[in-house]
Each structure stands twice: as structure tokens, then as C-alpha cells.
Length: 476
Image (tube, rainbow, N blue to C red; front, side, top):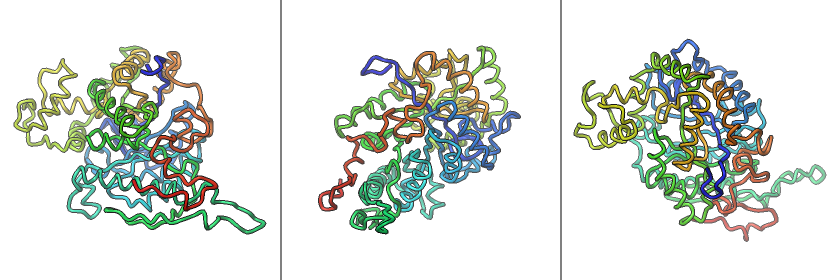
């Protein structure tokens, strides 16, 4: 329910995938580690281009808003949990070539990528997709990533966000301030392709980056990609409140994230003058659907036979930084010395009252199907009820649907769940702007290819007819 209008929300739905075999990246082992071993799973085909193009066509036909491809740099090699993993941007161009309306979100780190190079890559993809690119802005959290990028260890948390803050401003300058809206003339009679006085350097000199510019790409359909973010720390919330148009959250119950969502919306309104309704929050959910409840529960029991507890604990360690290998198999984790472990496990226990003892095995069971989000198991009606609970209790705007089996989980969503959501008025029948940009369809507003007027990125836009002297590049 929309808290402002009292009407039911039309949900934003994304498919959550990876370029690896099974979890959160471009690859083989997404949110349910080990399920690649299931005889009906085809995620091991992630090396083949039709694996991705077929998915894109399936989801566009179903009118999904987007496909989100996560990326990580930390493997759990034996179990295939987010490993092996490919570079996600390369896949998007292939999917964009066989679709017209669905958007593509991609994860790229501000800690290990140079802004000038990334701006070129994202603008190129935005051109080739006709404006259907979103950028999930992450600061990274794994020491393994830092070491493979030539650093002894990752920068401290707040330093990573300070770097991200400067990084995003550099990107705004390149995307929005370097070229005037009418810089391209393409006049064959005069031979003028681009007006030189409508392209300029950005001359950025900061603590972390020195980027003279200009942006090497002409303005793409969106200029700035749809901006996605997932941080829930204090620094992450402030960053999201100022910059994010989409926020990803993952929790096993809506009560866990409801307060953070409310805080971000309030920060966006009070501190940054943004319309809170223009920030869409998507929760991670893994639907397991059956035509009957018995069929759905049988699927869950079947999947558990293939789930990898080792992979689940590896993922848990990556998310939390906690190594559970030092604890005994039957040791009650709510009684260990580590406050971090105790508080994390208490968070799980609070919303799983039926579990009497929390051990490594319990954590692995909890995480192995659906990862860091809930597995909603049941009929289309039961799963839709669960989604509505999230919307009503946590002010969620939509969902990132993770899979257990690829591609069958997505086919089940399309064939079973979407008709139920449409019947309830919770999902659209067609794109708001067929063949439009990601942002137009995201906001359901024709012509809304750039960030909304109150968004900080809009202050960087060099508009048509405005001189370079008048269009001063902001230093904020």
C-alpha cells in the first residue's frame, strides 16, 4: 500500500542473477549455493551467450522492469558459491541486442574502478541499449578484492564511502557537465559533427581522483545511468539518501529493514530535498512456487538435498566478515564470546522463533536456500500474500527475485506468480514506455530519461543554449 495515496503499489520487479553458476554475480552459484548440482538446473551454462539472451527474452515478455547482475571478487571454489564469475558488463550488450524495453543493472565498485574508464563503459552501454542501463554503486567489502587489485587490504569503511562520494561527483561531471545537450550537430553540409565550444574539460582535482576530462563519449540517452545502491550502514544510508534512485535491501523479515528504509526516506527529504517516493526500495526474495502448497513444499525438500552448507557458510562469512569455522558443529552461537556473532545470530533467531538452538548447521540451513533473503514457499496466492506483507510492513516498492533453479524458478514466477499479482493490481500489463529508457519505465514517466529535477545529478546538467560560463560545474 502506498503510504501517501492509500492505493496499492504497482511493484517494481527485477530478476536477480549473477554471471557465475549460483549466486549474486555473473556466474554459476547465486543465492542458493549448491543447487547447480540439481539435475534440472542449467546455471552451469552461464558461459554460453544464449543462456543470457534467452533469459532476457523470457523476462521482457513477462514485462519485468529489469535484470540485475551482481558481481563479487571472492570465491567459494569447491561449492561453486558465486564462483567462477565473469565480468558482467560484457553480458549486457548481448541481452540488450535481443530486447527493447527491459533494463539492466550492473554492479561496479567505486573502490577499484577508475571513474574516467567506467564512465566510458557505462555511456557506451547506455548508447547501445538505447538508455537501459543502471549502475549498482558499491564500495566493496572483501579483502580478497583489495589484494587482487594490488592493495594490502581494503580501505576502511568510512574511507571507502568518502572515496565513493568523490567518485560519484566525478561521474556526474563527466556524464552531465562535459557535453552540452546540443553539442552534437551532425551537419553534413557544413561538416560540423560536434561544436567544440559545447564540449569542455571538467578539471576535477580531489583527494582521491584527478580527472581533467572531457568525457570521451557523447551524451547517452540517460546520460547518468539509473542509480542503484545497497548500503545500510550510517555512511551508506547518507549516500543512498542523496544519490540512490533504487535501494536494494536484504533481510529475512520486513521488521529487520523497515527502520532503515524509513530513515533513508526521511534523510532524503530533510537533508537533500528529495521526494521520498522517487526512491524505490527493492527487497531480495526467493519464491518457491507450486500449484498447491504440497507441491511447493515438495520442491523445497528436494532443493535442500542439493544445498551446500559449506557454500552457505562461505557466503555468510563474506557478508558478515565472520569466520564460523572456529566453532564446534553443535556449539550454541548465541553463547560465544564474539559480540558480532551473537548479535548477528540473535537477529536471525528473533524472526525464526521455532528454532531452539542456533549452530553453524542452523545458519547454513537458514542461508542455503534464498541466501540473505527469505524463501517464500507456497501457492501463488500464499507467496503474493507474503510479498504484500513486505510492502505493507517495510514500505517496500518491489522485489529482486532470486532463483533456486535456473531458469525454472523464473519460469515459475512468470507462469504462476505474475498472474496472481496482476489480479491483485500489483503489477502492470505492459511497460509504461515500450522501448523507453530504464528510467522512464522505472518512474513510469515518458520523457524522464535523466534523474528527477530534485536529484543532485540534475544540478550538473549542461543544458542546450546555455554558455559554458553560465553553466558552472558544481563543486559540492
